[in-house]
Length: 461
Image 1 (cartoon, rainbow, N blue to C red):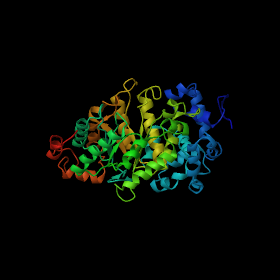
Image 2 (cartoon, one colour):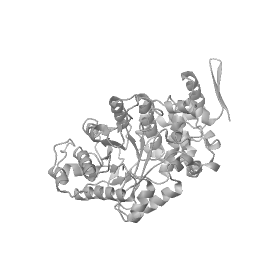
Image 3 (cartoon, rainbow, N blue to C red):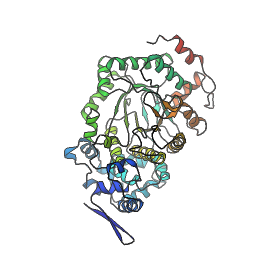
Image 4 (cartoon, rainbow, N blue to C red):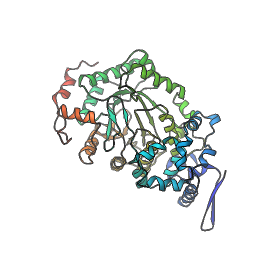
């Protein structure tokens, strides 16, 4: 179906829903690279006007990628709940935006329509919303998950302590993890991106992280972010695996590029549950996504990268995850060119993930060849805190020495707690206070000996 609108006697036509969504997207380099972006601000405005007038029901009749050839599209169709859609079924995209912004559209109402919204509907409405709109709506949506602690409570900000090391050296990982803990980072997860993907190294890393957690009695969870097939083999070896991790994308072909499909993710979920390491009924899946992933794999089928990103959230929510985060600036300037595009993408991703019912976090980051700097990341972090983001990722000095990109520092987590008033998970907050790391007001008060002594006494190999 073709779509069109007229601005001052000039008619703008869009050949199908994919084209309309792409042309309505705020400017970003990835869509320009794909050759699907608007030619300029006037065509973009025309597309946004046409999109605003489009009934939400149109998304049920026009799949951007056919279900017959794509298991992610088929999953989206299966997840759709017509009864949950009923309260918004008469709306256009523009009316949906206005409804989302109403004060009476609160947590209870947003939670009730979670499975009545498709990813494409949310991607569409986000394209006609200002940053302020996206923040205001996302801040109303709370998604709470649990493994050993409680994540996602309103007014709190959790952190992933990311102790990566270029050679996966055990002492290096332990030193980095303790560095983060001394700054109060790690209640979402202490998670290592391994430099290798062997089962042997995976087991060594999760065993090391579990030893740190147990020795220091930290109410958190740990994760080695190796491929899910490696994690399954580690579970079979009865290694102390808390969370099952995998990067996911918004099309079957893109996921095949990651070496996964929906059946494999279900196998991983079942394997993780078999260990029974968390609280009863614990969430144990951890997914990462990122705008541009499908395009970089030549698996976007002409769909804009933000819509493809939002489709990845349908995959994630199928497996009831503990954590999901977009690695917003990691893929590079070919997909998000500068700080402005990275900021916009991070706020969009958080909004879309939250409204689809995900415990959404953001890796606030950029590559060294992007037109961005740490002040852009300060801006994005502060906006995300206003939007009630579930968690962010922190590394020593904001410089990931293994993945070679710039992220947030552990000091940024301190800023969020002490300046923005965003404490960590309640169980972790109590632990920080009990070990003497923070005072009653939640501010850092010193380095407790139990943490600093650990490195000198532990037998690490």
